[in-house]
Length: 193
Image 1 (cartoon, one colour):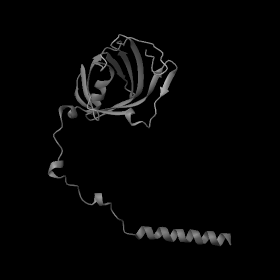
Image 2 (cartoon, rainbow, N blue to C red):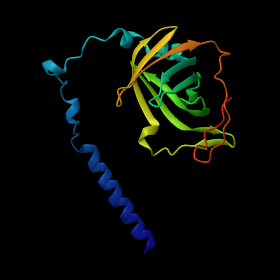
Image 3 (cartoon, one colour):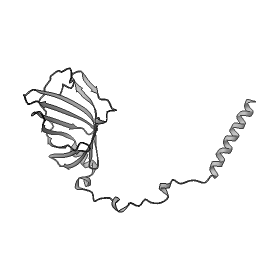
Image 4 (cartoon, one colour):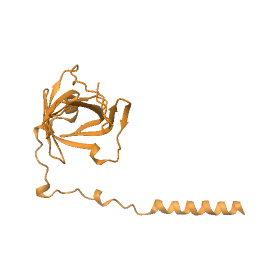
């Protein structure tokens, strides 16, 4: 009885498969004819930055880049981003308050370039205790920037959603920010090397 049931199932399966061979093939709609762009959808002339090949701009962004800006409280924020060829980055920050007190923190993650877009994926902090991973479900840990200008000395970019503009300067490989180690319970991001 088991053999008869198995034979029947196999026969039905083979008959079903043979019907598929003779069935009419349906082509996807998007492959039947080429798509025509409307007049206002025509591709614009690429900018000079867009003409710069992604591989070239990626190569230019390797190494250390320094930035500084004033903070709302009258202090300043400095940062040194080091991008590696393996697609990882590290940013060392130094915050100096208006009263002169300073603290440091370091962040790590992944980076890349696609056309005129520079992007970062924040993965965590470097702390005295070691790596503290970031929550990958937090949307603010993913940033995209439009590259406004890039050469051997300066990199100018704008955050896509916040509109903040940044300009950083290329630094020699041995350049480092001053280190401030200050342990605060509310701020575990306290170690930079």
